[in-house]
Image 1 (cartoon, each protein chain N blue to C red):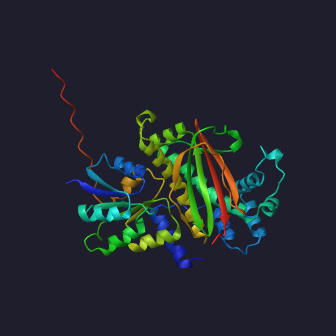
Image 2: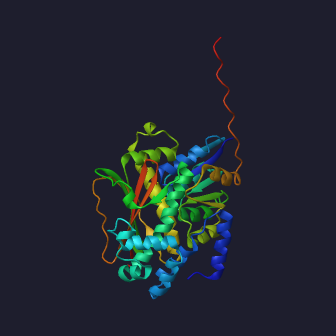
Image 3: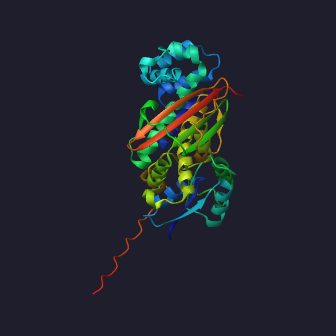
Length: 135
Length: 245
């Protein structure tokens, strides 16, 4: 069964980059554009990993992480923060809430895959067989 | 001021997560600026030890000079006396901002962006893309990002791994420019907050404009930065006004 990854970010650009990074792997990438949507999607889809931004409208990433960790059905889902904010207070608070890893923007797709690979099993998609050549 | 235990724990987490540290001179300068009772002599000594910061301060203090030969303010001491603490704050903000922009180009576009003197680039004329992010708290101001629409398209396409011709959705171009602003400002906001200058970022605004004015609040300062990589030219403006709340 494909690994389910939920990308929660208000930037469509970042969600596209995350989707592109996992394309070679047997993954389904789900998207949400704020913490509220992220929580609803997490409750419905039970992803194997959440990649979460901090600064978002409606509900920010810290609030979403807090609510996620309070929910017995969701608290075991590993979360990687993907944010441009690396200030001391933010990092200490987020670590205390129980984040699995932290990746500061800008980032390389390889870095994201490496960190995700420490949380979930990533298997390469089978390469499609070339179409038979007409006789 | 953060407790030593917090600082040590943060250093350990930063090492584990691979978070890069802000240059020592910039951290020190931000901490000094955050202390409203700090004397300019201390700030002066920190800036003088860093040739990059000294050069930028003198450039900010001589906004109308085309080059160093035209500087009327020639020393760090004079620059601080004339422009005040807001000027030092701009330096503290500009360094992480520039570093984040250059790193973004390197990591996401494989392009080596270089900081250049604003006079070395042709000025933008006519309609261009402008993004802005406001920040408010113990320090208040804006960061503006300006570039031609062709540059904005090339950057968005590069970030998304597309050819510029494949990118026809203007929303995607605007979103990529907004994210570029988010990344830059998120980095300098972290530096300000760590020094005690707590502030919050507002959502980015991106659109086409022909307006080249940059409003500066009374008592505030303005620094202009320019960057180039091949045909890509980017202009950044930072306005800041410390101790607003």
